[in-house]
Length: 83
Image 1: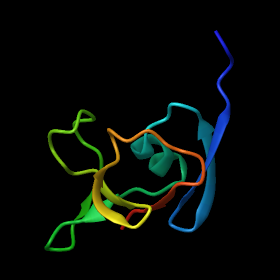
Image 2 (image 1 turned 180 degrees about the vertical axis):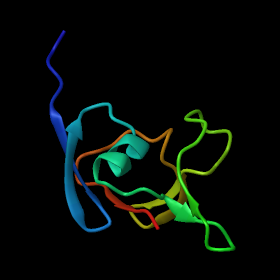
Image 3 (image 1 turned 30 degrees about the vertical axis):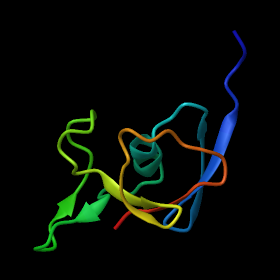
Image 4 (image 1 turned 135 degrees about the vertical axis):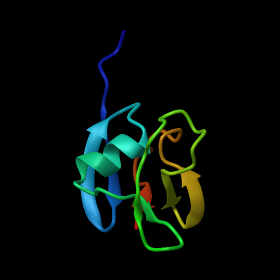
């Protein structure tokens, strides 16, 4: 088994380095971002179920909105915007 390498991504403009295989929701939390999005009433939302059913973890990844952070593995150079 080969050792895991690090993946470098950007979360809300901050550089974040995580182990290969880390999902975006974990990288967002590691960046210190408490909410991945806001509800229509402005309430903070974040990963809840961790299996892609609740849709609370939606973020923008590489300019594509509404990506599920709990189901998306980090790729080197990925740009994530969590609001």
